[in-house]
Image 1 (spheres, helix red, strand yellow):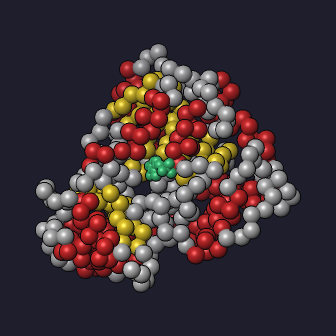
Image 2 (image 1 turned 90 degrees about the horizontal axis):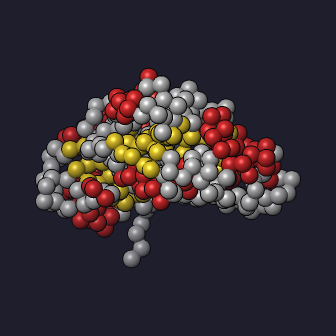
Image 3 (image 1 turned 180 degrees about the vertical axis):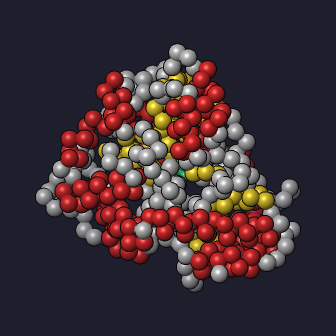
Length: 385
Ligand SMILES: *Cc1c(COP(=O)(O)O)cnc(C)c1O
């Protein structure tokens, strides 16, 4: 049966794509080796520097975020290298698994999925590695499975306090263009991101921002690579081209997204996400439910993961809200499968969209007979006005 009105895609990525970006993507595909393409390519390569807040090189791949994870590792490391990762949640675990498949020795500092990475634990771990065998520290900035944010600037300081030369790699696939991020100022060597979250694009593009130290590591790194090799990209990128066919139409969309972000102002974009996160948490508290992130100051402005009371299925609740209110909420991943649902409040999003989203959740809680106190939406409205 036809469903009237617009579907609410409130998962923490892909986020809803604004009409302006859809129209930009709808332009004719052009010759990616012809003269007109250079403008498109240069605008995207240059524009992304302003989003990563870097003067260093940004690589753009026609790939999902997972591809850019792989690119970060294969471009800078050698078989058997030790890599330190922090278990913030499902995405940190997936990055670790990928590293192991590539032949790296990935080590986890275990976490409880309710906070970001802990700089002090990272410092202590690195201080033990007197021989400097650990070649990279990898941290997820916005852990999309839990809604916790890692203090990236503090992790940098912890690595420096330990006097450790490891490369610092950060996954901000779901943080970029929603949360404050500073590749250069925070001393990150490789930043990984993707198109379908804060950048408001469909899935299909991903990014590596690379420091001079990472570029130097690329020259001696022995992991096998071909498609992902930075060395093949640098030359063509200088004039706005790529070594193979780029995602031309997604690049049109990316250039539109970069314009939109600057028209609003990045700092305003970050403040908007923080405000919506706070309003969503106010609603959850009123409902008497628990926010999965248990660490004050680390709650994400991108999404809120909500625990259901014991004995209630988060997936059954999500199925009910989809059926009755045409809203897609994010599922719980791996360790928290069926225990939490995630409310995405990222991308091209405003106050009324948040209120409608929270209303869908509140009505769904009733519909699915999940015990709760009414008035969460009112609480969010109070917070916003
Ligand atoms: C979405 C996401 C990924 C995976 O990206 P894909 O585009 O699905 O490959 C990795 N890390 C984080 C933090 C994410 O949010």
